[in-house]
Length: 255
Length: 258
Image 1 (cartoon, each protein chain N blue to C red):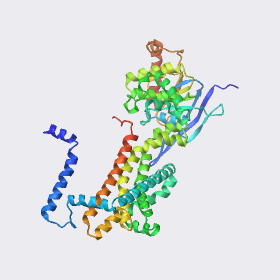
Image 2 (image 1 turned 30 degrees about the vertical axis):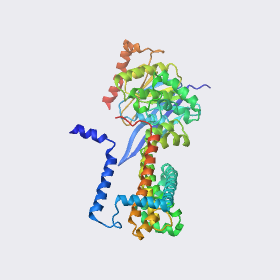
Image 3 (image 1 turned 60 degrees about the horizontal axis):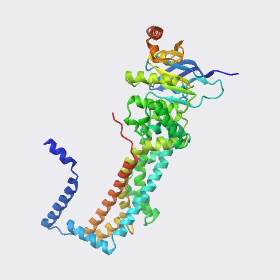
Image 4 (image 1 turned 180 degrees about the horizontal axis):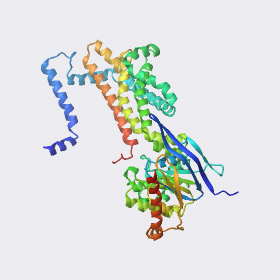
């Protein structure tokens, strides 16, 4: 039977030991990621969203609950884009993009050719030989995204990838992401603070509560694909934003 | 005033001039104080002794012996520190077992173990190589462990998410990541190892610059003692310079600009 569910998080809990007690970060998170779906997680900061990403990315074992893979095998490759670009300062930009291929023994010239292709797609072709420390924050984050995409991930996890950037760069990259969204068939889970980013990019939005975190609401994003940037100026979009905002803040004030 | 100070701080001729001036003061001091040469020889006399010792064939063979000990000790100590550092950094249990010894060893003055090593390894160059290696090993090991600790967890996460193997981690993350700290440690160790070699030679040897110092001192040939000292300085500087050269060659990426 063809199964369209890639991954299920089943009552995930996460508690960190802490001085004089425990830090209860995730309280019973259950969610389902379908294949080729783009899901945004939105919620207050400090609510353990990064912890969730790390668990889904297989970087952290949850203290309770489990991840279920209906296909019987873990989605591979699983790429993670972190909040800071996490580029290796000792590798040129192009080598940073090629890194996932190099790490798995792809011949160097082949890996670099592929990496240059991705840099070109992000308009960074001229920066291949640059050191990461000479890149602006926006460029560095684009390189990090290219590094994730070059792996042709089945599951792409993004932890506030645009969180550290200024508003203008942020908007520009989210438009680029949208363009890529139409092209790749990865399942994407992205953590964000921006309602309009979530509405523009995702198929589904999960609304998250403060610590200990739970998913308090979920909504489908009804806009058809391919989406255009102008979508943001439509009345439906603005109304949707209002609804999401209301859902986030209602819950906030309740608790 | 400030501006001329800035200009002067960039002038390359100042350090050599300073050395030259110091030598002149020394020469004049000896000339006028009339200290006998076996207490304080003048630079000119040391230079003469350098030439005569070279001609007599008692200088260079000893220089090479010490240089050989230093180099070999440095390589062995460095290699051992790399291997053991890698193991300790990847095994907290191993680190817990070994670390007390590292700390204790730091508290033992090498000059005090040198006689022991001579008892164990004889008076040839072997104990000196061991002392050199030990001198280099511990500071370097500590630097390697510090380097590993300073590697960002985020970067380690990245490699885990890429399912990178041990070798790829070592090649792309760990080695370049600890390289600056490693070379910083090597810079200090390289000069320390010269001290290690001399300490070993002074405790009992039949060749090397430490041995030469012992002989010269016994004969009140103070000028020769100075010649040997200067050769030791040159070896230490050469080691130091090589590490700086390695740093320039290997750490080519730009520093963070924040």
